Image (tube, rainbow, N blue to C red):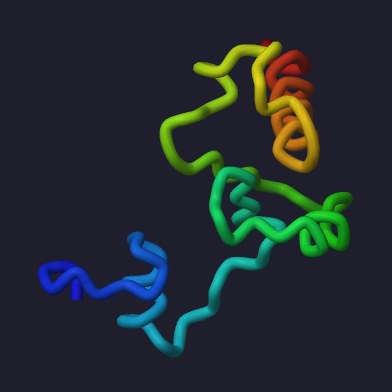
Length: 91
């Protein structure tokens, strides 16, 4: 599949989901991806108090963007704030 470029979402997750059809997918709370095109605000709002892992995919990461950046709005901004809060508690 990878050599032929076949993936329903254009990325590795699509390949994994197509190849391993009977596997248990991670819940939204363990794979919340704010920078993904498939991040849904309703899902975030529904699960936001239970989110355990935020998966910042792509080039932009909280530690490279810095605290004050152009993305500090909406759901993405809320998740960046959560990340910085955890960072501040431990570092």
